[in-house]
Length: 388
Ligand code: HEC
Image 1: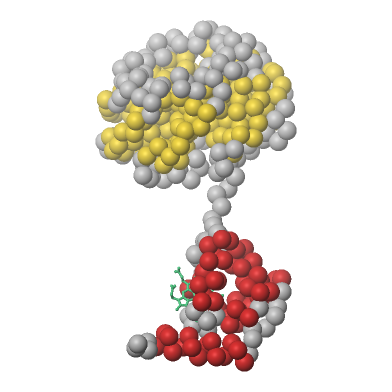
Image 2 (image 1 turned 90 degrees about the vertical axis):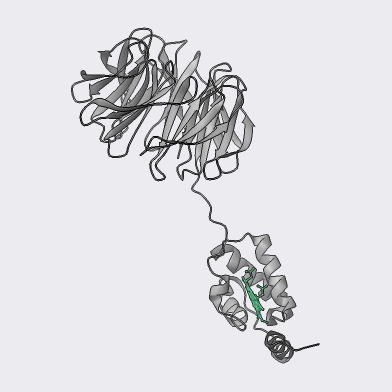
């Protein structure tokens, strides 16, 4: 048997540990124990920024004991180091986020904890709930009930719901202003957008738009609301200072939902009837590109950090990743049923897809572009948002 340097040093340390057992220190002095025992054979950096679980740290400590780490003589010190490492070099915990899924059939909203996928609450809302928006501070969600022509406000701390209204006919989608003050609701059966003051809960304006307004989106500066006129084949632009339509931009057939870049310069629109994605230059108010996507694309979200658009093709049972700069389709991920609406987690790592006919939410890993899991939800999930 040949002796290698590491084995020699291990033997030396072993001998050392017999004559000078490691100091017994408890609690917040874990760092002292760590420095006194774990830097004898390698630097402390060996253990830094590893982000391991408590169980994984336990295994490493056991391995180090096998190598002759002097900590072997004191179970108290082993505990202290384990505690220190678990607390300072633990897994990176994503900030808590909740997904709100609106179920049109069961007329409720399911609140799901994103990291654990646990259902936190099921809240009854109005009739045929269709759209949902989260207030910028995350303290309330607003549900548009197209069967009862009103809005349900859910307090996200208590999950208590109350009703406000009235909207136009069959309120569909909504968007909140960046300061949280106003909610803009599209009403496809009365061809208008109603504006609601969320501090007084009063309806403050009604703006007439083209036929069958569906998706509503806000410019990041809060100065414009974009309304997809599904039967008008155009986007209406509302000035939020005057609540007047200031422009109408033609698109391909059936504009449904939209996404806007953080600088507000480009608007992406999925056209459900044409199966196309319209890319609109908002500085000049015109379409600059139209790209073929899957069948009946109903929703679109933009991951601006990665420059990727995700499109839900409800007619071809897939979600598609599209390069937002070149409009090239990068990947198609099959999602069975009728994938209709999308939400991205704030870190962009997961895409949540609500599937109206399968009564599920499918979670896609956006880096690997693969389905990770499928969660059962209420009946006919129609919209999903992820908030704080
Ligand atoms: C007797 C010498 C010795 C002592 C004392 C020692 N280690 Fe190590 N450690 C090693 C050796 C040898 C390796 C490289 C072999 C390996 O990676 O398994 C290593 C590797 C590691 C690694 C890298 C393992 C990986 O999976 O990448 C970590 C982390 C670590 N030690 C933590 C500790 C901690 C924490 C302590 C104190 C409780 C400690 N070490 C004390 C010898 C020691």
